[in-house]
Length: 148
Image (tube, rainbow, N blue to C red; front, side, top):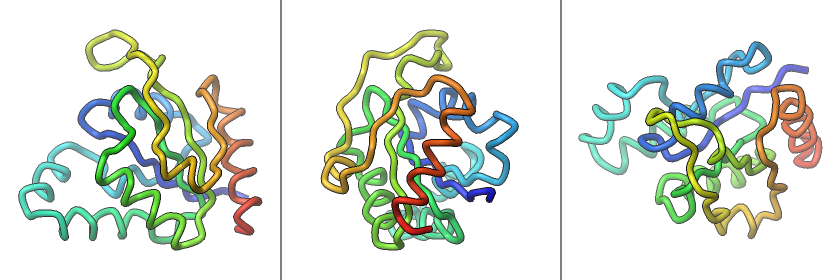
């Protein structure tokens, strides 16, 4: 069964890396932290914290799994923590996906970053992104573990 997946990540730093994954043929219909482009993110950011949380909440609607993309600077990010907390509250399956080794907008890879502590607290499995078929299996496993 196709899954609606919410991708949580450090937008400014990792959007290029995440788009490499979201562009795969089996990743159709995903949500990416509730927005699709930088202009929407910037406009919402100017409206304040409550507006960003509404955007995230809307992006989480009708999703069954949240994939937290772990880059060099993901741990401790306020909105990533909010996305993990809200995903768990809604009963979404959770998984962490290391993406630091993918090439960024500056054409370089990043060093590995720490795993967000809330992922560890929720005992979410952590994987390193390698290819599309593995990711689909990991997403299905997280959904099943959450009863979704």
